[in-house]
Length: 105
Image 1: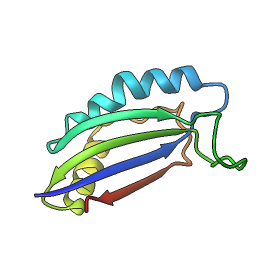
Image 2: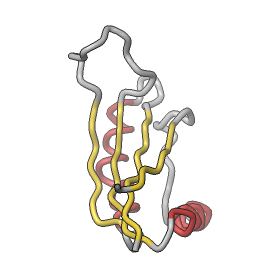
Image 3: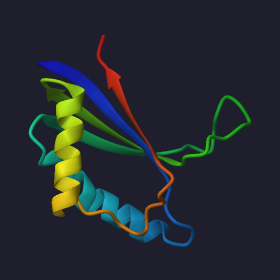
């Protein structure tokens, strides 16, 4: 069984940060934790204190720990659940997001 982390960098739509955080913390994390193989989920907000002055484009990060036979199978499950409505997307989340998979070494 492969172990990997699914990282999602995202932002709220301007003026909808509270709605975005409520949806993400109280609904979206639960939706992804319901997927077989997702063992943990946690969220982070970018700190105002950084080593460099340049700030990244994304202010929020979610990390999901996953154990699955392969990454593509997990992607297929997410897409299937999103298409069926089991994973609902909030309009308070910007469509400009960056999902990335990281394999454990």
